Image (cartoon, rainbow, N blue to C red; front, side, top):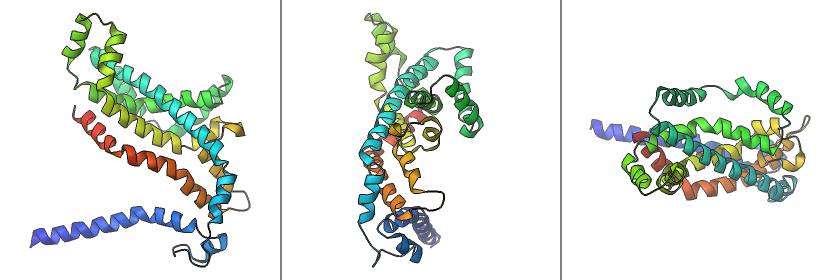
Length: 273
């Protein structure tokens, strides 16, 4: 009887938690089909006589979606590739180099995750401005810095499970360190590389604050930056903003659904090993 009651309570709590998590998506989706008047008339109701598809067409144009999507794609893809290359090599060297200094470096990267972005935001922008790097190149460089800690920790945990004998055999066959990593080790890192790529892609694609501080030229604005222009000083175009938000979510949701199975797999393997 107690097991049955516990099971029922678990189901009820799961349903309540599910509703809480789904409710923001419901509000965004339903209100994206309403006019501005329809949103203020009934926020939680389904689109009725105020339903319209014009919001999506207008939001698509105002977002300059194709151009801003290309900007977001370029910055995200280049940043993720650079993060994967540098952090995979760093994680490998920290695991294979047995010294107090390598241990110190690893814990230093782990401790860096505790530093909030807001604490270094203004000094960082001042330094990057003096170096004339307030542009997409500087933004990618900063993404490398902020994405390094978590990526190295994930790679570090995964690489510990790779037998050293595989690398020793490659060295005996005549491989140098560079060849050992790229031809032997890196192919074995595929599960965790996919996980690192997904986590960083979702973070960089949705990031607003750092691009707003760094990118000054309109031609390089990403989708999150374009979304900001729906909110003026004296008026807020909620109907267009919500429609634009749905459009902006579609690429990353499609990407996530195709890659979601690798997230849990990679994190689980990295944490266990």
